[in-house]
Image 1 (tube, protein in one colour):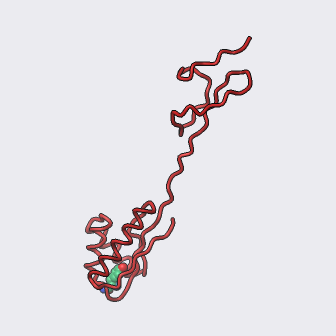
Image 2 (cartoon, rainbow, N blue to C red):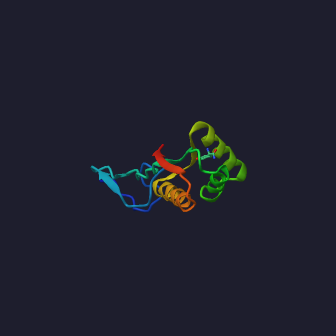
Image 3 (cartoon, protein in one colour):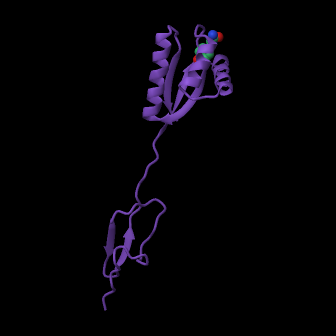
Length: 127
Ligand code: TYC
């Protein structure tokens, strides 16, 4: 006797459920058993990028603190801590973002620095 193939939406169908699946009807029927295997949906997490601030001898500390608050949404205390870290260590992390967000923030920092005639440099680096 041939096994009944369960209705596609039946909750008791024989399927392997994975944590990461959607509701696409992406199933294989294996042989005559009627077993339905749902393939895992690949939802890859995006790569993350560190936005780095570089020290220089000319950009005013107040400007760097203001940038960290305005562009990177840092609290005044956090902005001061990051600025002093860069001042003392030569480089520091402003934040970690997906590619487009990191790229936008680097552009904003470079543009604001240029407009204010400061030599401040900002780059991004894959985590
Ligand atoms: N070193 C600068 C000064 O003493 C301050 C500064 C801090 C500049 C961080 C750039 O990314 C920077 N005026």
